[in-house]
Length: 314
Image 1 (cartoon, rainbow, N blue to C red):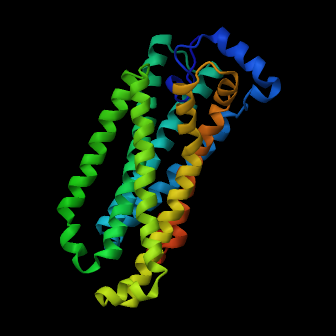
Image 2 (cartoon, helix red, strand yellow; image 1 turned 135 degrees about the horizontal axis):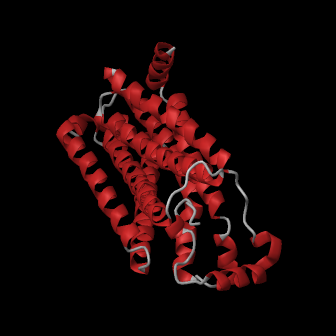
Image 3 (tube, helix red, strand yellow; image 1 turned 180 degrees about the horizontal axis):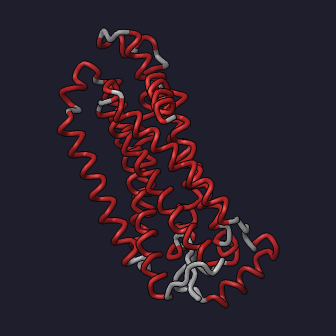
């Protein structure tokens, strides 16, 4: 019977037969290329933890009017992206557990359709997470370097248009990816987008911290900006840099997996790397778990509101 598998369409090269895959795996290193047998219960637990954490972040931002700003709206959208990862992972894991124990019997054609829908959610969360990290970096850059003009540059209307554009682009791109996943050009576009966002964010953060390290050319001397405000902005940049680092540590192996699918689909060592795909999925879910913890510990206002939300829930 056909079984659900997380991101089945991107798990291995579509044009490599199962026999060739097994032979290449055997020749690449034996036991080292058998991959990791990660229990479904671990996927389920991490998904639940991530879902609860991100729901609390969204609730805190919606509850506190002091957090009703473009920056926190973008962070809220990032939390929603993480929730998409959690919900899609929970749905697929629950179906896998029910099918494995014989509680749920579904036709193979329906299983394939479910795979496509859930994989589309996961791929959409990849694009939206990358996009909102880039948007947040640009927003923080404007906050630091154009503080006096920030509210005229990043208006609420522009923020809404930006968020809507990101969600629309994420939906369309994920649909195209799942529909034409056999086309290497589609994977190359996804990899290229990942590299573009990486370069963009690195350039912005390097510029921010380079200027902050030169007192003579400091922002306060250029724009007479209050020290407290400048310190808060730089603290936000540190927070987002940590988020960026965590994101690429967690998502990097997945995108490297995609690069290998395009460049060396039948190479024995590449095939060996493919066998650890479940580990890459665990890292992706861990990113969704870690992000809310960084928000809570780095933002005093958000931490206080989170405490109020938790106490009210009890």
